[in-house]
Length: 123
Image (cartoon, rainbow, N blue to C red; front, side):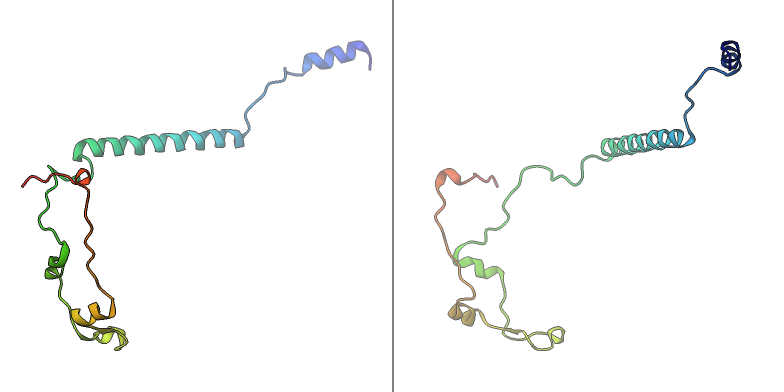
């Protein structure tokens, strides 16, 4: 081909442009949609927290209602001696408090708590 023919071929061809492929458009669309949905969920969560408040927070100060300490600990529990219900098919046998203490199954250990570790309870 001559120089003139090359020049004519170049004039006939449109300039080279980059067009996004359908795959590129799909990926960009999916990323944009994902970001939009995440933003929408975050906004819904923020509005829900503003409307309802934080989940189940206690109100006021904590107060000790009863102290299960020392030998008085056992006053809060009942012992049962005998076979378990049919649920275990009799493989579990419960023992009395006296038998549990004698066998070393239960024990109350009282420790001294340093004064600086204690908190003051208002009642």
